[in-house]
Length: 492
Image (tube, rainbow, N blue to C red; front, side, top):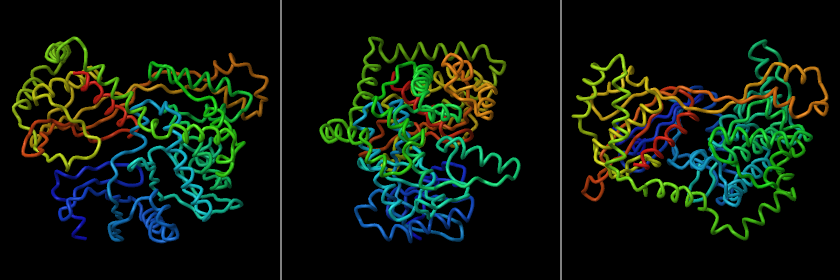
């Protein structure tokens, strides 16, 4: 147990989630960065512990590379400890607004689907496949979170609650909803077929990184509405990211086959001619394509920095805008007083190797970074002047509520009425469907803390870093907001 004691409280990062809290820390004894998963429910703890201790023992060393290594378990506190892997597939998809390079995408998906096939061959189903449950370690896709796994072969039926709504089929979600509201019996389903559907949703999310609600999943399940589905997701993507969605036609067709239940087994995906053709592209270009998306991101970031305007001018302009917003605040004097005290504080000093992976490093001095950050936060939500932003006394930490702008579908009741009446969708033209499923921009509130720290490396303190922590709100929106803030900081 001595190996798993945190170095100190400042090196601990907590990420709260529905079924567990993720605590990332540096081991006091080994200086190794570790991840502690603390479960809210003991049942899920023992299910996941059993998977790592018993199920994985039947896998060979090559297969085990695609899973986490369990280092320690604590039955009293319901905790599992693993090596920390900081890169999450979700982060890469968020940064690139969907993995636009199909070779790069299939490179990862092929590993994931092969791992799920190994599980199914041993009659094990994951039952909660989603982009958040895939980590990236040295170009390997590592599947995590086995708190919902089930023993099931092809013919097994289950009524167990599992999965995540965004990645489950609509009928599945409806059954769970009726069970919650009316105590209705959960309809039987095949856990293996559920995994396959979730793989289809994973593939879509990796490619487009937009949310599909149940109405659009229903549209995707109708083969004769494929062109309408394509138009709808392209419209949502354009409104959300202000650029065109680029998706390989074969990839789109494969996704549609899975979401329309034409494919219900993992080996059917692997044997699909569409998938075989996509894999052939990898074999030819695998080495050069893996980093294509990230090179594009670096190029765009570099271009944004290479503006004709000097940093000092951009910073002065942004901070002037911030001060003008502050003048309109009803809480001006109190806010300015707290801000002036805050500006006099010194940031904590952290050794670079102890920082959580994915932290942003900048060469701006502390005051300039603080000004840039405050201008970005005020631009997002000018209500920050009425918030207790500077409440932390022992570190240079801002606590702020921001707004994440997203695009969601709004479905008219008539759409579901048609489904309930088993209306033949072929009788609906696309204009009528478009009226039934509209899109609108919605602001989602997210509370977070942002700390500025000095980074110590090789005896020098020559960089600053921003440490982000979710306080309240959906992790998806928080993660995307963090990406937006990082991108805007880079433009200075």
